[in-house]
Length: 335
Image (cartoon, rainbow, N blue to C red):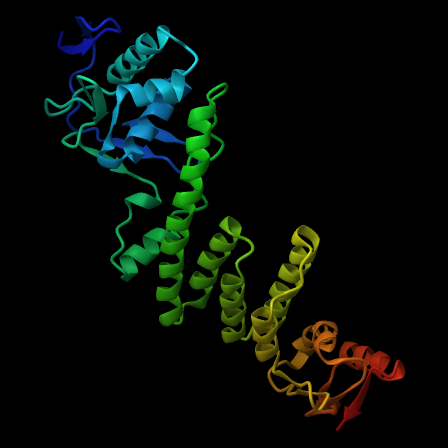
C-alpha cells in the first residue's frame, strides 16, 4: 500500500496508509458565499474544524501568503496560554492530513517561526477572485456567471475568536470593493455592447452589495430607459428613494432627481415656475411618470404651470392625478 508522509501534532514523522498522492485531482478553493475547499468529490471544508478553515483563509489572504506563527496563535488562540502552540501545530497537521502532497509539494509550508501556503502547490480559485480582468467578453461573461456568491466568507464565524472575527469583518469590507469594481467593469462592457439585460443584472448585484450608492441606481435607471422600460426606471427611482427615507431618513440627491427627470422627459424651470412634459415615449407607461411630480414639486414651490405636449394622449390615471393637482390649485395646465 502506498503511504503518505505527514507530521503528527508533536512534530515527529508518522506513516498513514491510504490514498496515493494526488495527481489529477486539483484542489479547488472558493472563499465566497459558503466556503468550499474541494479535492475531487470530497468537501474538505466539511471535514476540517472551523479554525482550520479560518487558518487556510487567513493564509491565502496574507501578503505573500505567509504569516508568523505568533500572529496565528494570537489570532486564533489568544486566551489559550501555553496550549496555543499545540493548538496551532494540531490544526496545521490536520490540514496536511486532509490536503495531501501533490507533485512532491505540501499545501502548507511550516518552517521555523513562519508558515504559509506553498506557492508551488497547484490549486484553483473557483470564486470571483479567480477571474482575470482582461476587459473582454470572456471575462465579462465569467463575472456574470459568478452567481450570487459575492460576499467574502459569507455566514462564516468562529465562536470566542474575536481577533479573527474582527479581521474577517474588515476583510469582507475590503474585498466587497474589489468585487464591486469587477462587476462594474463587466456591466460597462455589456452597456457598450448594447446588451442591457446582462448589464442590468450585474448592476442589481452591485446594488445588493452596496445599496446606497446613487451612481449605480442612476446607471440602472438609464439602462431601463434605453430598453424603453420607462415604468421600471421610475419604479427603481421610487423604490430607492423610499428606502433612503425609511432606512437613512434622507431625501434623494439632486443628481438622482435630475437623472429621473431626464428619463421621464420632465424639465423644470424654478424661476418661471413651470414644468414641461413630453409624453411621446411613454404611451401607456406615462402614468408612472406622474408619480414623480410630488418630488419635483418640492423643488419649485406651491403653484406652478405644467406644460403638456399632448394632453389628448394622456391615460385616465394620469389625467386623474393632474386634475387633482389642478383642483387643489397646486398647478395650472398649459396646453
